[in-house]
Image (cartoon, rainbow, N blue to C red; front, side, top):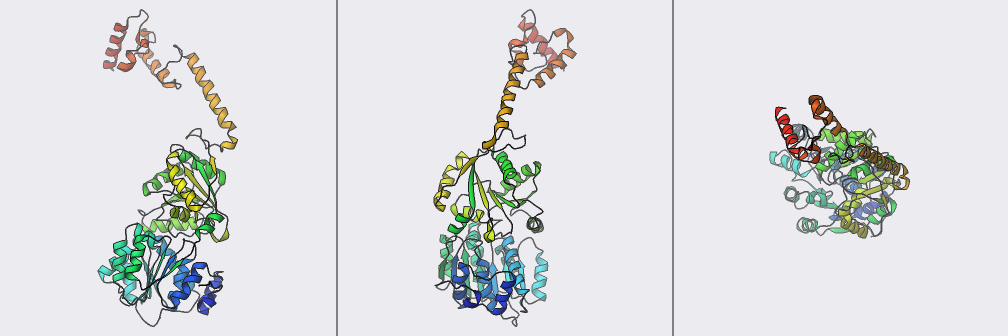
Length: 479
């Protein structure tokens, strides 16, 4: 099918075309051009495209064309993997409806909200479109507060993520609540066995539409690798943030625990940062996203699932603190920046153990990514400049070495202190011992452990090791 170059040619009603123009949307994306005519024709579609390619409008516009506001029943159902995506889809739908006079009512249902308020809305107002997550949708089904028997249009959005996080059974249960005659649209970034199984089992000869946008994402977004170690990764990230000065940045970690740990570390270093993952309450998640969109946060640390479908204008940088474990996740992550033709930079931190994952990603995107190293001197110091300007770091190391030599030279026995270069604590213990036992002439064994007492420093002036050791033991017991 040859893509059409305007929404009117695709068959979209003029009132919705005008609503799109108010949002400065005038030209359909490839996924919209390919799927809208098929959906308007009443046929099922499996659409494969990356996030950020316009999938939401690809199913919202045909869906609105099929709603009859005169019928007080749920006519369309959109299932999403996360609360954030449910909220985002609802916001885009309400933005279109606010520009037209259609009396179409929308309700978003997801975990973290007061379920009683949702039930009240379902009872007191006719709802035509429901958008929700699998768990909360099934909760309403069990309570018999929703009726999907009249659903004409079913959408499974970001289906790969929905099934990846364990919602396969829930999705099947929801599908079975809808009539066999419904029209189904399934959108996914990848095409797994489970996706194909859903398509074969529950869809009616679906059209397969595949839009290969990943090449465009890979080409348009600047990418680089920072080579580091696990021990120095936090310092490398901190220094890199100082270097690139992101306006808004998203930092990706693999697990919720890693997100929370990094949040504490970066807050301690003075960064304006917050977290986004599945363990947060809905009120907290919404508050975090609002602050991030309003640029009251500079950095957002998130897991892949929490950030699925996340579309925030102005994200200038993406930091892969933990390297993605597959190519699709990598493309999804870096696609959070460089939106709407803006510049974007994606930086991935790689340790030696990540070598195979990096090779897989570079093979998948068909290019080798440039490497650089961030030199770190101490985790307690302000992060240093990158390797290209590390003269100050070299000077500090030389000063430390010289100071160490001077301390050893001052040491009574040539610097063989048990505490190494940091001889402050040793002198402190010796001073205490001398104050309490002025007759002992500064023998280091007083007050020390058995291991220290057995050393040569435990001898008195006459070389009588046994008596010195005995006195040390009695003194230690007395204390």
